[in-house]
Image (tube, rainbow over all chains, first blue to last red):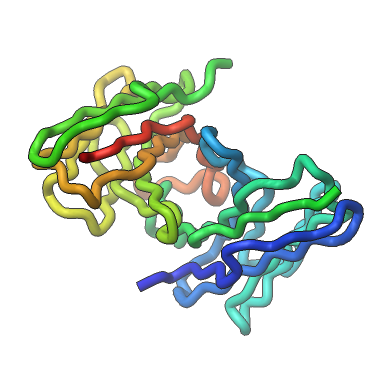
Amino acid sequence: DQQVKQNSPSLSVQEGRISILNCDYTNSMFDYFLWYKKYPAEGPTFLISISSIKDKNEDGRFTVFLNKSAKHLSLHIVPSQPGDSAVYFCAASDPFGNEKLTFGTGTRLTIIP
Amino acid sequence: KAGVTQTPRYLIKTRGQQVTLSCSPISGHRSVSWYQQTPGQGLQFLFEYFSETQRNKGNFPGRFSGRQFSNSRSEMNVSTLELGDSALYLCASSRGAKTGDKLLPNEKLFFGSGTQLSVL
């Protein structure tokens, strides 16, 4: 049972345009959401997070939006740069899971120069 | 500050063998988590250790086990390897909080580069 879903395995975006990566979840107990970025042969690195009490969090070119009623979050990257080409994982946690994160299956983002 | 170190980087085993993977967390981090990454499945949580105690366990068979030492270093072991165990095994460390305490919501996990295990 995939509690965190990223339905787009891949996405291609022109350099300079906006990249939008989507994530859906089913567990209403999730109260914190994170995005990780992964390059080949490296471990995932933390990108940005959002608490369930907020609907938006911004950090430079990266913004995460949370729609709790729809159980949906999205990551916006503006403007997209070639170095953003990577696999992006959405992850979620609940108040009782300690350090456990539930990850989505990832979206491979390719920025076209 | 040194990052999370996983050894070995690559491992080739045959079915039925067992394997031990090692993880050294960031200095001062007391929580170590293990994840399995396979194509199409994302990262699947294996288990988490804090102060030498397993606090959380994912839905993996008993062939998958782990432990944590007093210096926070962790090992995971897979016995009776199967072809389906071929995957990238990732270790992540975090400062962690005592069970029942509440730090900032979800301390960010810091991942190692992983051990790529191939079972033939």
